[in-house]
Length: 132
Image (cartoon, rainbow, N blue to C red):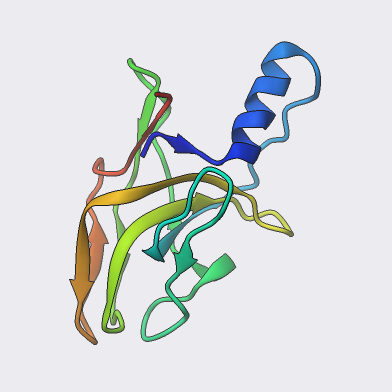
């Protein structure tokens, strides 16, 4: 998941070049599940609140280890029980600001279809964010 949202990318560039102050991420960060992937400039389609999944600011929180060699950081496990019947195509990482800000986005290596009542898990260390 090495895809930054354009807004977050601009924030990092402006801060590193001294043209603006860095706007820090408001914790906790949320892992939103997508049924259609977005792009650098547009969010994807998030799974609607259903079963055990709550969309938006109620999406599961995720923590990341500090960045290491290769400027990469990886996640703690994310688990959603009682999933609705759906197909997840990607994930997006958002902060918890009053108006949440999308930070990272990316497609799953393979879409995952769940049946009603299934558990969906992103294993610890399998969601890596890195600068390209």
